[in-house]
Image 1: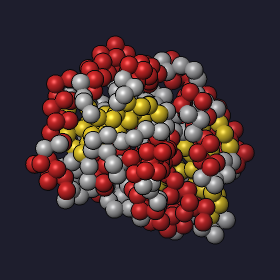
Image 2 (image 1 turned 45 degrees about the vertical axis):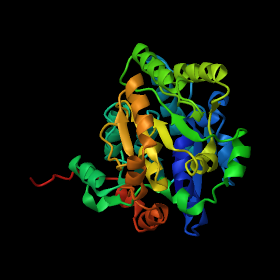
Image 3 (image 1 turned 90 degrees about the horizontal axis):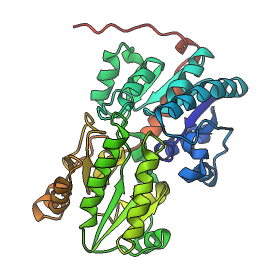
Image 4 (image 1 turned 45 degrees about the horizontal axis):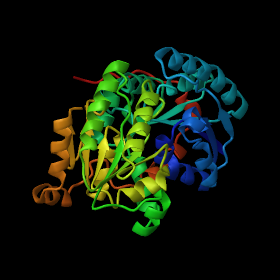
Length: 387
């Protein structure tokens, strides 16, 4: 059996990978290995490693890399620790293929360690653009450090090929995270209310906002103050916060969320992590996803709900017509929230099509990786595009 090692470092990433993990685990010709790292192992960020275990998976290795600092120096030191720790982990587990998703900073040392150990890398969600975050640079660097590429749409596949990757190793399979919507039995309204401990109101918003990593901390704080000022004026509305990630500025945002909830207990509640079941269940009952998380761009359209995307963190990503883009300005955000409740907008999003596909991506990926001779993947040539 061939050993497929999937690395996961955050709650959001794990949620997207869950169905893929199930399909690898269930395949008799493959052996699933899971390495849990990053914020999964941090109580401050909800110790979401427990969610992986509760879902019935075996975590083969827990790799501690997260420092108690989200400054640029702290993040860089964490990356250095990841390089050392994953070199040791791969040496111990001896996987035949390493699978990573997305554009998190810790993936750079992880895929570097895999390449030095001569282990091929399969990268999911390459070719995308997020011009408002340093993730943009990291994602394309991971592409060059990977041997197989699985993208969410044809436009992204072409961008990967444009970077010199062989088309025979680039596959448009759609967004793997959408598989959860097809497979997961979501909570009823009553069960969801019990799960979050509050009753939904006439209007309900799900809010997730991560720091824009190209900005200074002062700018992050100023923008988030504007956002909270807009949320503060809402009446008869429940705001469900899920907290920011471990990027530079994440702790600052989370502190501000906690203070807002203390001052607005009648209309807000905050979670370090909702988990995939509660999060997707929430999308059935809310009016919009607000903030700058990719879930508002990728998953919300499948539920025919609005997404109010704030700032430039997701700039460059393909959007459905249900997405409204605004700056981190109080008036713009209030106007966008007013817009989603108009009959015209409700009619517009009723038939919206999700450009990221309809699911069943994980099974496609498993079928493709089984067809490859991993030894032949260890070398790669630059593919010159004919202009």
